[in-house]
Length: 174
Length: 264
Image (cartoon, rainbow over all chains, first blue to last red; front, top):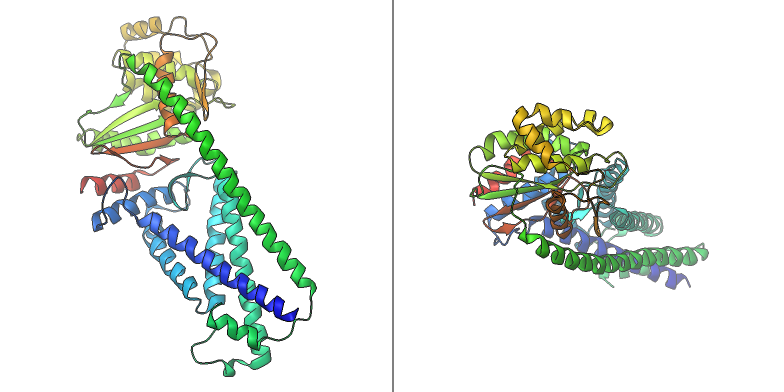
């Protein structure tokens, strides 16, 4: 039974982090991909990011310079976060960052929904209206990120208690 | 299993609370149920949307025989077409008009870069009962080339007429007496309520008037987008239609997007 429990926890961490990695890599891709039948180029990237900026702006939370900063930094950061989760390096930190980011998204979406703003979510590209379905999906992702974060921290603490951090092989961390 | 987790399994301490198995299983089952529910709902929604789009296309094709009455600003030859589906009572539509479309009209429409098309999408929701009638007045004004004045008058005075329903006052103030009489004549027999849009089709009025087919045509076009709320805007550049946007967008960010298209 103890071995089963360890296996279940480890499998959940792997599946959870891979699912989150896939979600963030896909989210970055759809924000950066060319729109309107264009091919990949710097120009198409500019169009895609400008379009994403309009979606961020529709939340009416930030001034134009803040919207531009978020719109231009978020997709590359999502790409980085997806790759970080994929590698599994320092999982407790990558999952914590993921959970914090998803908390921010979820709060913004709930606020927009409660205020009756009929706007695009902007989560996975344009044209996806905020509604119960998008809230359920993002809420589920947040729950998974929180569970992975808690799991990664618990395993790290347990490991430190039993073996001590000095006994970890070089480059290994959870 | 990757090497790191194998390492953890081998070195981790023995569990102290076996009941956590059950809690983990319940948690995983809950996540799986939520995910399956979301997927099922998405599939159902996709099927319904496809059916509605097909219905809309059929009705739109039928109404293509109407002589055009454009509610638009600028030249049709502009490289960018900006269509906005709007409800005259919607506060966000007013904000979009006042803060974004007005500077766009004065700048990019005037410069021949953008052709701005107003599409009526009056909503059947509380507080919007005067929207269909406003759409009729605007359409009648468009017939004699007075759309721009009436469009501006309705947004500028939205809070007033949306409450008391006195649309005529603002239409009359937006044009000459002779023009107003012509518009009034077109509005004869146009008793409220007028047509309204809904996601799965259209609410037809009990007493239709001659201007209604134009509004219905816009609503059906909106259902094909699909419009899920107002304002919704669709941008077309060099024949390529970009994914629709909805809600408010500020002029500096819209301008940035238009510039990125024009620089292609």
